[in-house]
Structure formats: structure tokens, C-alpha cells
Image 1: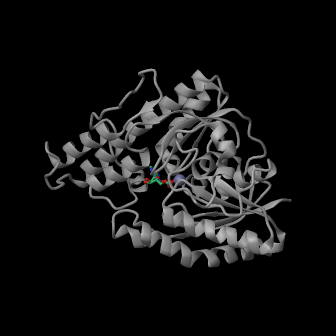
Image 2: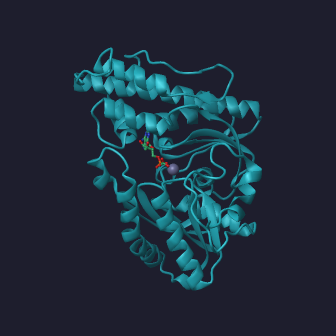
Amino acid sequence: MSTVLALETSCDDACAALVADGRTVLAEARASLEDDLAAWGGVVPEIAARGHIAALPGLVQRVLDEAGIGLDAVRAVAVAAWPGLGGSLLSGVTAAKAIALRRGLPLVAVDHIAAHLAAVHLGRERVDYPFVGLVASGGHSHIYLAAAPGELELLGGTIDDAAGEAFDKAAQILGLPYPGGPQIDRLARQGDAARLALPRSFLRDGTLRLSFAGLKTALLRHARGPLGRDPMALSPQQVADACASFQAAVVDVLADKLAEAARAHAVRSIAVGGGVACNSALRARLDAVAARAGWTLLLPEPRHCADNAAMVGALGFHLWRAGRLAPSDLAPLPTGIMGPRKTGKAARTAADAVRSP
Ligand code: KG4
Ligand code: ZN
């Protein structure tokens, strides 16, 4: 058994996990700053970074205790090194480097976006490549062709807001707390999705472009008047209807574009990762889409769709096995290297390129 210790601190949560053979989660722990950040209506980078620094030593100890092993049983350390918030990433990268250096362990730098799609390995004996995968989170909504773990070719994505960002902004418009996705998911169950006619940008236009800005503006006008500046005056039932209508519009375009990509590349599996993949309506729709087309749906359980360290351990294992180690002077790269723009080749050499200035 090859156990990887994985850290993920790219945004507002600090997470640690122990993952065996890239697929079996031995233990995982999370320190969420959601309560501290709710008062601000979003992520405050400095508060997040300070929270991670305080949380990390305890998180690492917790996963070791839970798995009943010591650091001597760990074979490699993996950390999400890009993209993300600078200070948040730095806290995880510094901790991972310190542990790797102190214990003489190999260090693996992981792309957070690629890790979201590597989450499909968790709890799964085998994953057949290639597949097309959608990463829909607070910062990304992009569709990739995955040739192997961590080897992604960008096929398309949003030209403005990310899907999760759209959920968060829609919730804010409707007077719901941050993060908005889970709130809208919950309230949508009591709402009528046909109540509002909201736009579905680029739907069936033959491209893999996504856009959520127009949808957000349409909701704003509905909830806060023609100029979007009136106080929110919807009844609880009208809010639920708005949630259901908004969610249906997002699900329509995400599911449609992913299916379009799968057909265009003649793959047999589709995958989804990122916090938005927790959405119950999206999960149900993709289930139906995959069943109809005869595709395998690679859908991680919700806790491995949202940011988590187990996905970093899954990808870290494969990169380590492929000899793709990070340099000892690894530095985080907030803007990302592979990011949404770069493709397979860049991903392969990313770890070598990330050095301290
Ligand atoms: O992947 P993630 O945990 O962090 C990022 O890398 O951004 O995604 C967070 C995003 C937030 O925008 C949140 O509102 C959204 O995922 N989200 C959801 C749901 N749960 C989380 N969106 C829709 N439905 C959900 N159930
Ligand atoms: Zn994420």
C-alpha cells in the first residue's frame, strides 16, 4: 500500500487527507472558515490564509491519528500548488515542503483543477481514459478532455462568471447567505422551475462556450426591479421559485455542453468535479443523460466534489508514480500554470517550472 499525505488550502478551507494507492481514503479532515467568512459574504484572503496556518498542524495530526499510522508510513506528500489565493496556497505549500524535507519524502505539486477531475478515482477500482470532464466550482467552469490523470486538454468553458460564482451571486441577489449553491439547491426543491423564463446562453449553438452573466442579470432584474437597485421584495415562495428557475437554467447548459463535448470526442465516460457537482439537480440530470447515451458517469461523492484533500492525494499518487516530482524550492502559483488556458503538455512540465523566483 502506497500512502500519500495530501494538503489542500487553495481557498477558504484547509484540508488534509491520507490516500492509499490513489483511490482509498484512509482519513480526511477539514477546517472550514465558512462561519468566519459568512459575515463578509465571501472569502477574505488574509483571513483564510491565517486560518489555514493555524489549522494545518492539527489537521495533519488528526488524519494520522484517524488512520492509526505515523508519518513513517507515508510515502509521498502532495499539495495543491495552483491555482488559488496566494496566501492560502502558500500556507499549504510551506507545510508540505516542511514535512517532505524533514522526513525525506518526495514532494508532488498538484493542479487544483486537475485534482477535481482526479477525484473520480476515489473509491473506484479503475477509471477508463479518455473521458470528458466538467469542473464547475466557485472559480472555474471548464470542460476538458482527460487523457490520463492530470493530463487535460481544455475544450471550452465560461467566458464570464463561473457556475459556482453565479450560484453565489444569485443567492446574494435573493438575500440568501454565502455560499449560495447549497442554499439554492435546498430552496429549489420547494420551488417551481417553470415560474421564471431565464436565459440559457449559447445553449445548442454548437460551441462549448458557457456564460452566466446574462442569467445573473435577468435574475437581478426580476428580484430587484428594472435597474436592479430596488430592495428585494419576493415572498419566500417566490424566492424558492426563483431558486428553482435559476438552478434549472444552469443545469440545462452545463449538462448540454458536457454531453456535446462527449459526443464530439466520442468518449464513453463523462465526469464532473468542483463544488457545483454537489448540486442535486445537476447530479440527477447527468445520471439521466449518461444512462440515455450509454456513458459511464464518473461522479465523485459530494464531499469529494467540493474542495478536499483526498482529490489532491489521488492525483498526487499518479504524478508521483510517473516521476513527476516538485522541486524542493516549489512556490505556489496563484494564477495557475495549466489553468483553464493551457493543455496537456504544459501540465506535464508544470512541476518543473514552478520554482521560487
Ligand atoms: O470546488 P469548490 O468547493 O471551491 C472552489 O474551488 O471554488 O466550489 C465552491 C462552489 C461555491 O460557489 C458553491 O456555491 C458551489 O460550489 N456549490 C454548489 C453546491 N454546493 C457548493 N453549487 C450548487 N449546488 C450545490 N449544492
Ligand atoms: Zn475547487
